[in-house]
Length: 285
Image (tube, rainbow, N blue to C red):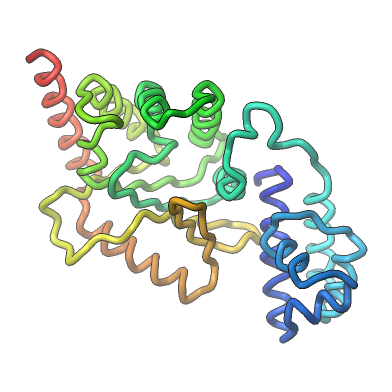
């Protein structure tokens, strides 16, 4: 279970929002009970700010939540208030909208992610990272690389999540900054190494796959504890977290279609080996 304050706040905020909806109360009504603004309640529910234990107790009383459920949420509130400074130092370069994702990543039971035009962070080789951040004009490449390498620790946990990746062929042929066969060879060989891990599954969606269309990138996270399953979608201005059942199911259906069209694990390995040989030839020519 992730222990950082951001992940606990996100979990607590989700639970409080669903308890409020079950009680058929608006955020403004909760704000009136707490003596604060509706905007403050919204921030509590999104996990972007902390909340006093007394305010959590007041909210639960207003929602009619009691017994074991109330005690579980109070324990979660205590955990959310128990840490400080998790995002100081080199970790502070991580955008605020991505911190919830990286906090919850190690806590997930299963992660299913689709990427159409880029290699996702946990799969990137260090050579690929350096090239990407340099081409992007980043001013603190060292901190960015350290953060990305930190994320790879998810694979080394005693019980890591089942991490399932579907990558478009385009992501494996489009190098940061243009043609860079050495970078891409390093990246493809890195994928072959990672795919040997027991709970890491990499599947390539080739250009010839039979699909009407492909969706934008998304990641599905599932949990074994009280944390609600959600979908994460990233865009140029930030990231979105969707956990309403209807929205969630739409992305599960999209994943299933992509997975049905993608190569099986053994076929993906063969594809990557052949692609690696292509990059070796390009380097020698």
